[in-house]
Structure formats: C-alpha cells, structure tokens
Image (cartoon, rainbow, N blue to C red; front, side, top):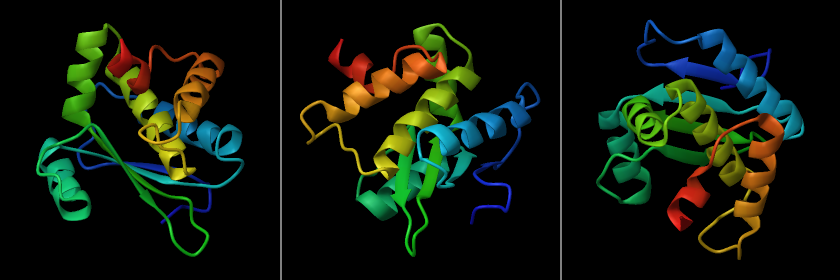
Length: 147
C-alpha cells in the first residue's frame, strides 16, 4: 500500500552498496511525471520470489526481471523487480545496477499505465524511449529485445 508520501520502494534485503533514498526519489519522480500523481509501490526482491510471483500470477515458471500488478479501487498498482536480474543485466549492458532498477521501474510503470509492447504496435516502445531520454536512462528493455 502506498505511503502518505507517495510511491514506495521496499527491499527484501537492502544491499550495502545501494542508495535507497535515491531510488525512492526516482520512484516519486516517476509518480509525478509519468504516472501524473498516481502512486505505485515497488518491491525489490530475489529471483526465487519473482519466480514464485511469475508462476502464481502469470503461470510462467521462471524468474523474470520485472512484474507489474495493476491496482484495484483506484490504486495504480505494484511492481516487483529481481535484484539478481537487475545486477546481471546491468553488467551485460555496462551500467550500474541502480540504473537498471530505474529502467525496470519505468518499464513496469508503463505496463501499470495500460501499455503492452506485445500488442500495441510500438506505442509502449515509443513512450519508453521518450521517457528514458527525459530521465537520462540508457537503452530500455524493448529496444534491447529488438536489437
């Protein structure tokens, strides 16, 4: 559930090298600018938890990098991000893990806003690219798949 301050970021285990407050500020920036003031909650967890969530809610038995769960009763919804996947993808693409988490947050948030890159004829890809440029983020998920 969103806090009175707005969007939240919760870690199952906070890595010692993470700037937790910076990620919380980024989530609130996404809330203000991308979600037009609608808060969301983001869980940063391990692969085992993402695998369980993916299996239980999507019927897919594997860990994934980000999952989006639309809200009910006017809430925007929740995101779940795999810290292990974020670390691996950050290494693969040559940037910091914190940057990868930001990319995953943006991607997941666009899904919460109703976008679907698998069926929207490129609308989500264009929105993600536009927001990444505004937010100073490197190449996003959709562009990586198409490259």
